[in-house]
Image (cartoon, rainbow, N blue to C red):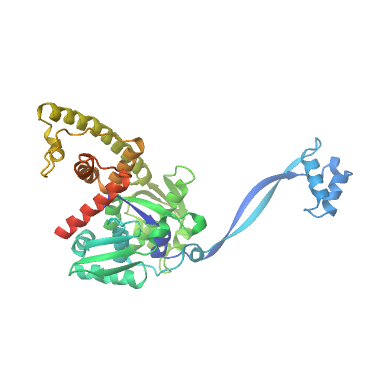
Length: 397
């Protein structure tokens, strides 16, 4: 069971694909059809414009004029032709290269992305004992795999104490770059999905599941996709040479935790279960958190009205009103959020939890709102406080 990690994490596709192992280079012939003017029809036989097309260069003014006239000719006839395009697939050129990872190192790399990296990919005060418990392995195994990840340039880390480390995820800032600047996008994973991936004992099955999750995520950029069929040849291309068809089928035969899997003679169909469709779950969770914060505003302001009139309040707001500081307000302030602020708070709740964001807002209420301090960026301030609280809790553990 995964504990004390973010509810969702963004993991760079380039890093994941490098960790899974680059697929073997291959070329693909894409066949398609297109409509063209049939110049063999009788109406074109003695037409001067047709002959201009055969004589003059495509970029000449006369050729361009001829094409325009032919396209608008009332006597033209259309025919269909097949076209073939050769596409070369080279993942090393597209994603870069790092050595392929084995089971524990791969799971550890994914888990680290759930441990509250900041915008630079830096994670502070990680307790290796917690990593060990989550991965169900001993502490020495965790350190061995941290050393592997560092040697392969997936991370950099340093020890602060016997079990506490600081760490930086390599290339983390590239997760969010646009394609024209070298970005290759990221996949959103839920804590629930992380649980299931860690529970997969078979390395081949783990690699296949992650590959299909990445491909489904890429397809979802073009439209809603929940299933994909792959032939064995394509699956084999992204795996080590020892992975024969029988090994592939055997490895995923009983792995129906994340996908509903249908195995045929030459292909395998993967249909993702709704509870692991991160895009869908994240949208649902976001909407639910927005409603919770809307309700919070109403309930909190009712409590403020009550305490200001007769000095009583709902006990669930005790931490907001029981202020043990030198400053005790004569009157508590009501609150309001702009729509984009509620959306920021909902996004933070997805990443860290609703309770943690609410606790951070309690700090803001006491130290900023009650003291009438200006807040320029509520979302940014909340994130800073949440990360500080996380670091403090880890140091106290």
